[in-house]
Structure formats: structure tokens, C-alpha cells
Length: 228
Ligand code: CA
Image 1 (cartoon, rainbow, N blue to C red):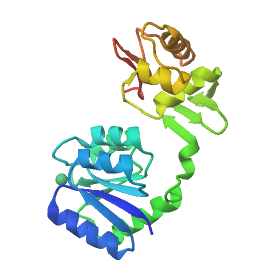
Image 2 (image 1 turned 90 degrees about the vertical axis):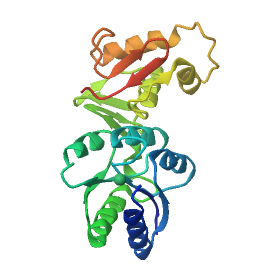
Image 3 (image 1 turned 30 degrees about the horizontal axis):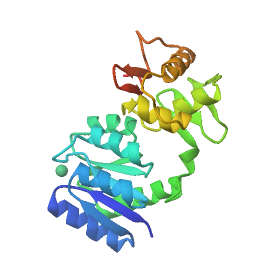
Image 4 (image 1 turned 90 degrees about the horizontal axis):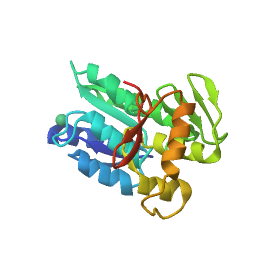
């Protein structure tokens, strides 16, 4: 039995999904907006999210990025027939699988079972690996590779890279980074983060003028994103 969050704004489709999932023995929560989904994902212990890509408040890619900012829960995106092109960008943004509407409950059950088997339900087996584009971070080994080649990182650089990579596409403030990576309160004029970011950037083989992964957001902080 797994706890599944259904994010679907169409009340008929939502009711059908809740019914099918309940029949399959899951505990089901249902919401109709991305904002409500983010709230649930931030508080409830979920095993799986089924996310409609056509929500009224946020596009699917933004919703997924924000969801990935708060949770590593496995996500199946549900897309309308003919909109399969958008699936690629949602898979890149962190979706685990997709399903094209309309789908049968048997088809959905098969996808869910396969995904839960792969991720081990509540505790994803892949939680030790963070990957973004060609970048791969092994949290257990505290090692990172780019395009298969090892990157030699100091402890701080590794922690900085990991913190950003676990929140792909999100702009992280210097204040947040200083607290999370250095464990210190931010005093405002410290250049520590900028120095480490520039070292990290060099090791990623890029420059501030031509960033690929690590982007400086002037006056705010940094974000890590897969190259376009
Ligand atoms: Ca919809």
C-alpha cells in the first residue's frame, strides 16, 4: 500500500483516478492545482505523485521543478494525446515516467507498480545519486563526474554542488547557501561563496561569462541547471 497524490484539475478525471487508485489498494490524496500539490509534497510522506501537465496555475515543467525543490518523490506525469513533445522537457525536469491520456486503470497500475518497484516505494533506491545533464553526483561516495570524467572537488565545493544540484533550476540565495553549506549565519558582504563558486565553475570547465551549469543570478545568488 502506497500513499499517492493525484494532481488533476478536471474533476471527472480526478474522481476516476482516485477511484482506480483506491481500488488498487493505495491511499489517495487529490488536489487540483500545482500550488496545492507543492503544499502536500512539502508536508505529507508520499510514495508517488501523478501530475497532470495541464494545470490552471503552473505549467508542468515549472510545477515539476518546484516539486523537485521540496521532494524526491517519484512522479508520473499525465499528458494529453498530441502533447507528447512536452513530455521530454518534463522528464528532464525530474519526472520518472509518463502516461498519455486517456489511459486504462490497468495501464496506470502497471506503470505505478513498475515505478514503485524501481524506486523501492517510499525510500527511492536512487536517492544516493543526483544527476543533472551530464553531471552525476554520488552522495554516498562523495564523488562527482561530468560526462563520465571524475571532478576533483574539495569538501565545500562538493557540498555546494550537491546542494544546488538537488534543487535544479532554482535560484538559491547566498544567505541560504551560507547557512546550508557552511552552517553559518550570513553576514552580508562575505565573498566566501563567490570564491567557492568560481572554483567550482572552473572545475566544471566553464566561466562566469559562458556558464553551462552554474549560473550567477546577479544580486541574488546561484542556480544550477542542465545546459539547454
Ligand atoms: Ca488538466
